[in-house]
Image 1 (cartoon, rainbow, N blue to C red):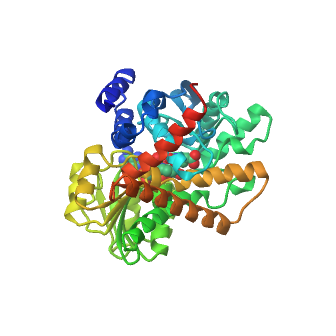
Image 2 (tube, rainbow, N blue to C red):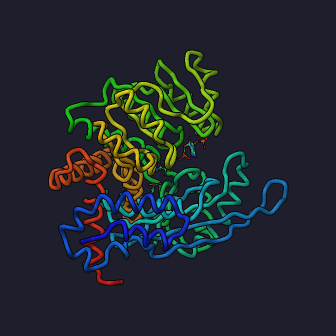
Image 3 (tube, protein in one colour):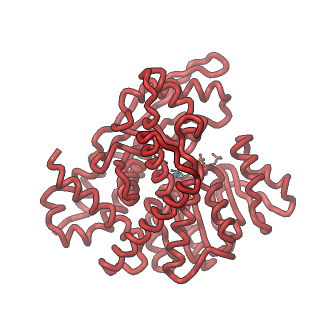
Length: 444
Ligand code: NDP
Ligand code: 2IT
């Protein structure tokens, strides 16, 4: 018999105070219990203890100067969690809330997400508590350069390949890559993904997470004899994932009626105009309340979006634990058909069971938002082959990857009698791949 509670207690003792990491490990371990009981080998090889201990967790000081000439100090992080299926792979997050717990939970999630893609990538994540908001371009560049000066010791195209996440987009990736190249005096384009297409980036990477999220959601709906066409969609966030999720949802005939940022949210009954959002968020890096100026029929609300707008599909695309019990009760009350996680771990743990019990189709983030890292892996392939695939080629590959992920999960659900519990299906399918590869590579 496996005592999951005891394993989780050990994790809490070994990683004191790291609540997000405890949450992510609890979610995975609870759903693979059935597999551990069925197959003794995972216990014999102590996979739980090994898979929950990162290969390496790195923390470093980053000094930089602001525009007033003052010296600033931030913390940088990189957690290299597991490289059993390929080089460590995962984004960098720049946000004041970043700490070891957040980076560790993201790196842990990334192991299983990356395994689901079927591509040769392991799991890692990094970032800093640096706040990019209200910083000048020069300050961003100076921070990125100093961050990379230290990070460059630990990464490499076959070792660990970062990318973007919250607060890190194409601009930051450019400054990070430029500094890496300067230090190494080598053009190793595969060392980081999310690059501009001018110097080794992949077409379609910018859109990949959001588009992939909608492909996944459409697969999940189709499997349950429904479709996203003509459905009302609420989205949270207005960053990279949210914008391109809205774009694909609209392309497939859905009506996107909400978006948000960390100060407030907008409701547009006529459907969100994405050109306006892209202008506000991508170009001017401003606040979402400005939307109202351009669309007088829309409404702006200060504060947290609580999902109290009737809709059919919910796509949280902002950050972890953005949906609490109150939001979930609103979603259930409004008879939402499906909720797919564009963000990593946006739904608080006790809420997921509530969604499932109330018949809401739940697309877990490690599957639903895997499109971004998938196209990152395609970027790595193009870099090592010296090729550039067209947008259509990437889009076709992305679509197929998302189809395969959903199909693998639904087959796992059938095999283990999990009905529509796609979270358990995703955890079991990905854990099996990683654990089996760990056993084959010996005790290291
Ligand atoms: P961006 O920085 O581009 O956008 C983040 C969005 O979320 C912004 O609208 C931001 O508001 C909002 N937000 C961030 N933190 C908070 C918070 N604490 N409370 C409320 N709103 C918040 O990031 P991404 O779009 O890249 O990432 C969004 C989510 O998707 C994250 O969970 C990320 O881990 C996940 N993800 C990203 C992938 C990628 O390829 N980029 C891949 C897979 C998952 P504001 O503008 O006010 O800061
Ligand atoms: O959470 C994620 O999957 C990402 N931020 C993207 C990672 C990547 O390496 O493209």
